[in-house]
Image 1 (cartoon, helix red, strand yellow):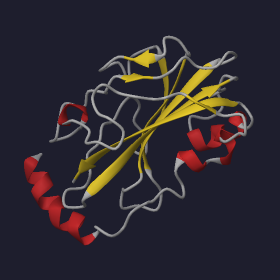
Image 2 (image 1 turned 60 degrees about the vertical axis):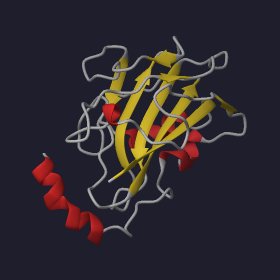
Image 3 (image 1 turned 180 degrees about the horizontal axis):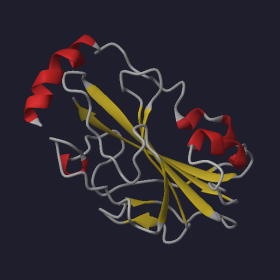
Length: 191
């Protein structure tokens, strides 16, 4: 894998100014916005908001791809399901790269380190930007610079019906007016 990083470094330098940005971020989806949204205070013992994500939580040649522990405040009464999305807004593509999208029950209000595995039945995963399920940790393109990884958490007063589609964007209309609270945690990693 180190050889691959060396080979990709010139491409990362070439694409350094190309960034997806936040325009198409899940945080800007109108279906997930509402006037009654509260906050969930999303945190991790692995890194503070805006800080570097430890290599332990990275993938490929950077680390073993172990999901970080996450915790949040008790969701509001009436919460039936949680939605957690992790995305990279600095990928050199037209849209942010979705590293993970998962639905799960609102209790307990935490996820233990390493718990976001594809075979964990607590979570219902939707495919990431490469069609995979489970946690896919950060791995910025070598030479591309610092990437920002966003963990978005939503408390919903409805349950997603993912039987018709496994595409998160296609499911978003189901959530319009159903977001009770949200939380956001950002970590960085340099490519």
